Length: 237
Length: 237
Image (spheres, chains in turn brown, yellow):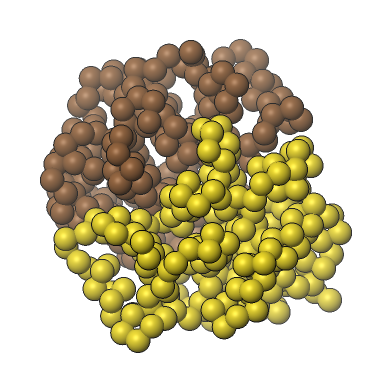
């Protein structure tokens, strides 16, 4: 069964967490909105009264199943492609980590959109500067040191132990995103989270991920996505 | 097996979504931090190097299992207590709805804390006023009309059909929270979402939920929780 991924075609965004899982799984999928006529197809599906409506992209079509919400899609793919433990405790643990990563994703986005996602960055620049200070000083260190602690307490090189899970792929993406958005901050921070960076490197070196990252399929980070590089929001040099 | 719920003792907060599920299930549980010495127990568990660390409360202990993240706890309880469909498609659909509700919860919180959760409301009042305008004009209507559409397209009186799921309990809580925080806004809005309000009423009338709501176990809304009533953030009279 070929998967159909529906997501905005010009950003990594939340869809990237799904793309990474599909790539690592070697799954057969098409990134619908990046094909000719794909955006129209995405919009039709969002408005189709015959389907259970997703609130927003990304969503994944798999035969009759239409699954939305990033972590929910990963729960589904994790079980199908060995990207999560099979036992209940392990499955819930990986899902729990994914939720925590999802919370960080929201906060990383809201740094540049603290007042409202319907407004432009330019209309909330001053507020974004204050939000960035809080994100850099408190929030992102809290999340990253949490992930470091999870790896420290764990018994393997991945978050859930010896085997890679979808949460590891997502943590890789977090590091990449933070490096892009806040390079000066991350330069200082990375020394404090050696296990997280080690995990990032192991994920990047996995053959399918490495091939994907080197391909045109990987959309570059840009200022329409979640992780945006606005130098004025990063720590001063 | 008696569940142990760990959550802040003086607010509804995210823990309330779990409390509602435990109550509807008629589950045997203790709300640990509301008992004598319970807060110390919560804090010890957060720092216990022998457990898989939760990022933050709420978390639920069930024998050797320690499960954190609200929607993850609900996934677990839903399967155990018939609060979610048994088939994969239904299970994923309810979980998907829960994620969307969780996104709304974040946004409802961030209205009064747009700059940072580490700062006081008083230190971000001006920004909160702007954030509230966006929340009232765009975001909460988008979420509520989405839920209305789900009910309209569905084939039952609950979000997933004829049977109640944990997502229905959470949507009930959303309506209650929005009514508390934004009474003037909700008064105007409720006419537009008759199915959501109908669902809210059906949930409130369920015997176990009704008994819980009338009891001391239900903590009143207050200005330390997610839904806070700051009249200056509501629509003008």
